[in-house]
Amino acid sequence: MKKISCVCAALGLVLLIAVSSVSSIGGSNHPTLCCFHFVKFKIPLKNILTVEKTNKACPVPGYVVTTPRGKFCKQEDVLLD
Image 1 (cartoon, rainbow, N blue to C red):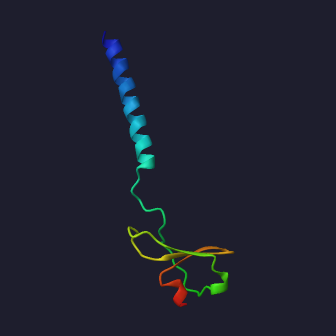
Image 2 (cartoon, one colour):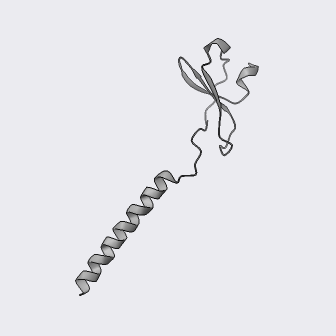
Image 3 (spheres, helix red, strand yellow):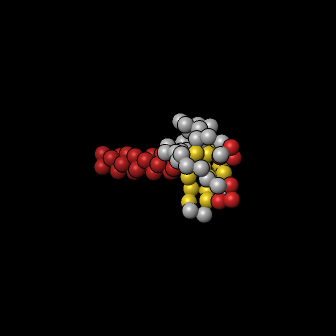
């Protein structure tokens, strides 16, 4: 009887771990778009494909600018450059 309860406890623990790991994957409250390194150079308007403002929860506000050469983070308003 002890062996059965031990097996049930182990299975319950495995099930609990599996459920909690799945909920933490989708339930993350971390912002998805943040910048930590910013470029200082000016980006010509003709090269800008998109501009996205970073999430309010990010530690430093900024903009993610997408150009044909890649994505760059800027601290100031990109359209003022």
